[in-house]
Length: 467
Length: 123
Image (cartoon, rainbow over all chains, first blue to last red; front, top):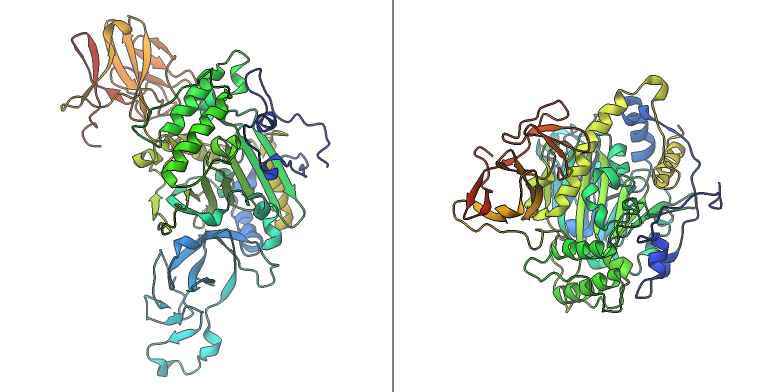
C-alpha cells in the first residue's frame, strides 16, 4: 500500500497546528531530515493477542528474531577501557560484549565451554574472561588462555576452544550485535538513521543517566506503549496542557532491509483534544516551567507577547542560551523543533534513539528471562559531550528497578519519574487483559495513523518469524 | 542533566517540624478544592464539612491528577476510573485499586493552611 492512501494524518485545533505546520513555522532552519516524510504505510491488520504471551511464539522469536537480526546491545562508553565488558541478555540468550582493543569490540556467547557457567553477570573488567566455577579463562580476542589442571583435558585442543563469537558493529557510539554468522552487514539495517542523525551525532553524546526496569508485561507490550502518543490523552492527562498529542507526526521508512519509524510530538502547544479555546499562552508558560525543572533556582520566564517571536520560538531560544552556556556548546543553529519536541526514532526490533535536546533518551526493550509475560526496559538520558576540550564524562552506572519499584523511588528523575510510572501502571494491566480476552476477540485493533508504527513493527516481525 | 526536576515556584519546607505553608485559609472556602505544588509533587487541598483535608493530587490507580473530582460524604471519586478514597484516612473505598491515597497532616496557623510533608513512619 502506498502513502497516497487517504489517511487522516493527525488532528489539529485552532491553537494547535499539526507538527508539519509547526516545523514550517520554525524560527530556525530545520534540517532536511526533520522535514522528510516517510515512504511507507503498513497494511492495516489486526494483531493476534496470543503472540504476547504464548511460550511457542516466544520460542519462535528466540530462534528467528534474536538469533538472526542486528540488535542494539550497549554503548561504547559503557566499556571505556581495554578489557571492560558488559553482558547483553535477551530472554535466556546471553552475550558478553568486550572492548578487545582501543577501538575494537567483540561479542561472545556468555557461556563457559567447560560446563556451561555464565561468564559475565554484570559490568566488569580484566585482561581475560575467567569462569568463576573452575577458572577456565579466555583472552579478550576469544582465544583460550588457560585451563587449570590442563593435564586432565588432553582432548581439548586450544584452537577448538575459542569462545563462540557473534558479529559486532557500531554506529554513533551504539554497539550492535547479530548472532547469525551469515548476517549481512549492519549498515543496510540502519537505513536513514546515519543520514538523519548528522545534525545531532550520537557519538558526540554520552549516557548521563541510565535506568533499567523489570516489567510484568511482554517485551512487545512494553515497546508498543512507547511507539505512539495516542495514549497521552488518558495515561498522561496532566501533560495535555502543553503537549501536541493528537497533532503528533508519524513516519515510516522501509526498504526491505531497514525498518525505521519516527514520531515527533510537539511541546509548548495545547493538546488538540482541549479544543479551539485552549490557552496557547498557558501551553508556552507550562513548557517554560517543565524545561526549567532541570535548572533549579533559575528564574522561569513567561510568554512575552511583545517579543515578536512565537511562544515555541521563545522557549526554544531560552533553552539554546541556557543549555549552551551550561554545556559550553553553541546551540544557536538548532531549530525550535530540536530544542523542544519529542523526536523518537525506532529501529526494528527494539531500539529507540531520540533526536535533539527536547527529550534526549535512548530506549531498549528486551524479553526478561524465560517468561514471555515479563520484560526489561532500559532508559538512558544522553547529554552532549562538554565543549572546550573537556574530557569525555564517564557513562552513568545502571540503576536497576525491580518489578514493583516505581521510578518515583529515584527522585533525581524529577517529573520524568511520574511520566514513566504512569506508563508502567498500565503495562501489567495490559498483559493481564490480553491473556483474559474473549477467544473470538483476542486481537488488537490499531489506529490507522497514530498506531501505524506498531502495525509496521508487527508486519516486520511476522516477516522475520515467517509466522 | 535530568530534563524534569522539581516544579518551579513550588513551596519549599519552611519549618523544622516538617510542616510547610501552602495556602491562605480564606483562599479555600467551604466546598472548594485546590491543587498546590511542593517539590515535584502536587497536593490537593479540600475544604469539606468544616474540615481541611490534604491528599496527594495523584490517584494511586493510574497516577492521574485527582483535582476536580467529585467529593461526597468525605469520599473523593476519581473522575477517570472511579476509584473512591476516604479523604481523612486515604483508604480505598472500592476495588478499583487496593492502594491508599496519601494523606498529609494539616494544621492551621494564623489563617494559613500548613501541611506536614514528613515521610510517613515505616516508609
